[in-house]
Length: 304
Image 1 (cartoon, rainbow, N blue to C red):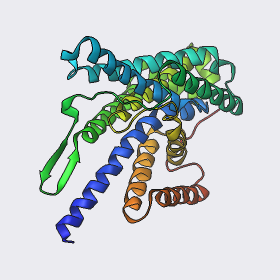
Image 2: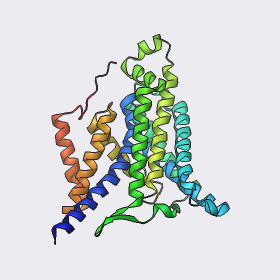
Image 3: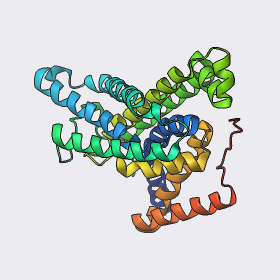
Image 4: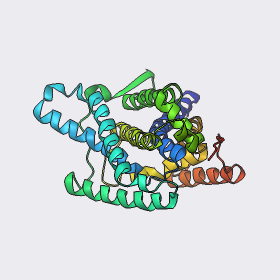
């Protein structure tokens, strides 16, 4: 095998890792806000991702049936709708369930696990027990070949651009907006935040809903690279928690670095061994690093 062929294979394998990184980061961002900033162990986070994916599927089906001339333009609007529906579901879940369980992390784990099972059954009953895929616009299909032997899928580049946009938006919102100021004040010192007039209960609800909305965007992005079933979201929940824990529970920068490291390690390892062995190697490396640095890569100092 020539050196140029090896280089092309390495680049394509690296880009496959970037595609995985994009999905993990979008999942991890929402979870970092919910788990890292609020201390809620949301086992239903994957199902909020599935809500976003099913929103795109339903948008595709309705557009194809009633307005086929808009098939090339529906997808960006479907992404926005995925955020809105997942946000609304998260707002309702926080109001009905999560708000009663703050400062009881094990109870939030059990309650959201039950919520995830209920949502999975709802997907089976009201949508489909089988995996479904939306009809994607033509401009998302195919690949880009910068030179001979190197093909980069267009859908992967789109997901990467979407991830960069969402990550930048979350960073700006957290550090440059009033909502971000209220979140950081609440995380830093909740009694003092209440004392200066911040409605911490409303901040908690909005934060949880935004985290779920970002998971919905992750689901919308996921439809470009895979099919969606009732348990699709649960397949990513462990990886999402690993990303947040490994990066540092209250650090968005750590979430970005962790998602990139995990995705690239797994992708490069799959070039030399089977997928299951690559997963074992990645998990083993994470466990070893967390044994030496249990607070994660980027520990945040938080007062309680």
